[in-house]
Length: 202
Image (cartoon, rainbow, N blue to C red; front, side):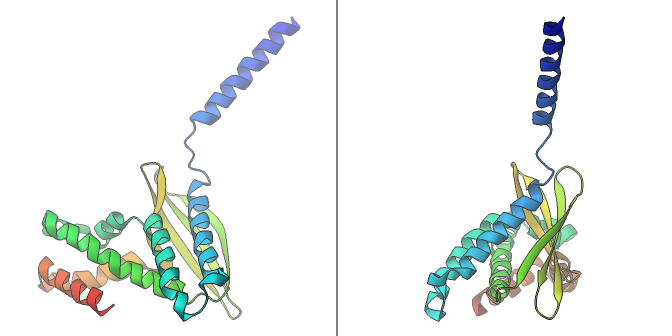
């Protein structure tokens, strides 16, 4: 009798473990992904070997590697252009993604290099369906707190950022407005030329 009860318990435990293992690892995964990546950035910024102007190129290169691992440039591009995406030829799309990546990377690196040891807190994860999430964080400075939200998407088993909202201003929405103004009276080639010039001035 006891053996039967024990066997039933073992079967019950096994089924419970199988159920747990079969649940997609979504809960907590997006927050952990972005928090771990931001901590990698902070490690670079705090590295005593990378202090001073002479170390800036090495620091920037390390941050660039992390940036490419963190952001989904194709998703950024498609969401920024929205319906205008279909106006671009495949070749123009590839160039747009490449140029836009350089612009975003420069914007991101310029801002992150201004970091001066403020505290960063991640405090909320909101799932938006099975493959999207929003992570809420804030930068705590001496004079104020700056809310930063990361919008993420799951692709090929990896969570990546496709938009950043700083103080209620979406990076995607901001660029979408700019690009829509150009494309409203212009062509994809004119937008590409604008981005080419912007990249060169960097």
